[in-house]
Length: 150
Image (cartoon, rainbow, N blue to C red; front, side, top):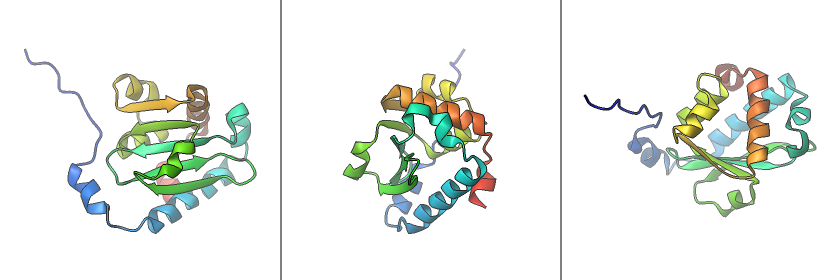
């Protein structure tokens, strides 16, 4: 009997290659619009983050040519889209690495973050307490990706 094939949620490699020369501005605009919608729908997000409000989180998208830096500063929260090798991401309190599909499925509640972590679809480094607070905050928000991007 053959072992079960592990399900992965990665985009094909050519997608990253094809997207590399594209400008980041459209992605930046979409991410900032999504952040504004999140803040409007969940004004208590910083209370939920607790002591970690103000931390930055680097979302490393292993199958895309860019990463997303989330600044949770209550005074001026922001989302910054960076080229994958940008040193700006090094200042993050924590890094969460995985495919874009894994991240989207986790945020929308379609996949469990713990299951993705233990199956090695997601990797975390840095302040794990901050990552846990972010995860708990996201879980409590019942987010719909389509509504954030529309």
